[in-house]
Length: 136
Image 1: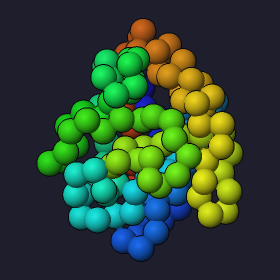
Image 2: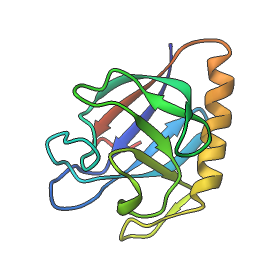
Image 3: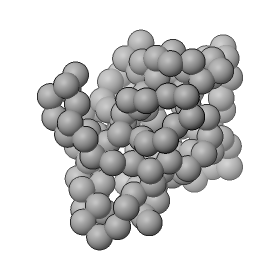
């Protein structure tokens, strides 16, 4: 199993969840919803290790990385977007981030991650390890 890591800066109920996604040589910024008890479409997901698969997204009309077996949740994607309002419970990625948490070059970041993910899937299953703190 090949793993990528999402290391969150912090996870609170009062602010969007910011972090970094490390996948091979990639170092991307992430943006998720605040922690709201794992509520569907409005909360980031619990810390843990999740299998990631490539599946068709009707919303985005393309194959996207989906997190599997998230407790009490489904349809958790890694996708592009710039602001907390774009997350709907998913993980956004980008190449740059403002101190306030706005992502830039998100589509490019997603393309880079999807390329890494596709190459990794050729040889093994892929998982994502999500933790808070500890740097990268």
